[in-house]
Image 1: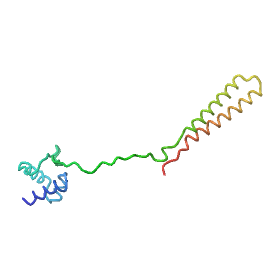
Image 2: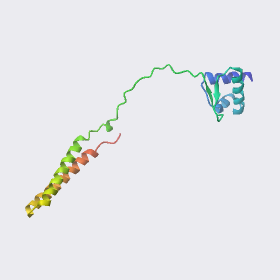
Image 3: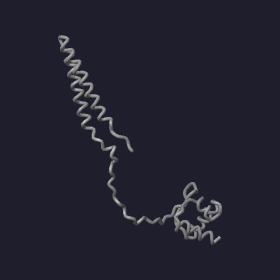
Image 4: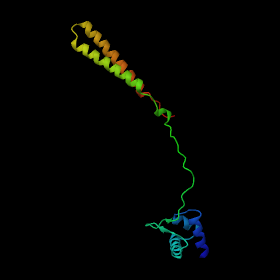
Length: 143
């Protein structure tokens, strides 16, 4: 039994295993027996820590903080997320303004020539507006 206790202490302190089921598998004993051994080691003062409320893990109190340096990283956005939509927005606004101009001219047109001119402006404005929207929407997908 002392051999199992020393192996259990090694599993907890050296191998940093906290799952009681895993400790039982490594020691080839039942998890209930592992809990009993842990309680005996706690009362003897060989281990410092607590068993979780559900009884599935043992947490050490003397956990060492890693001495590895923290490396700051500058995260760079993927190329497809840095797409510039400003030209498409400008072209869409210009197309919308031409479309509004054509509708305004159509509303105040007195003869057929002015109405034809307004219809041409409406179609040109709509075309430019759709080209601008296409330029906004053509952002590539991730490769």
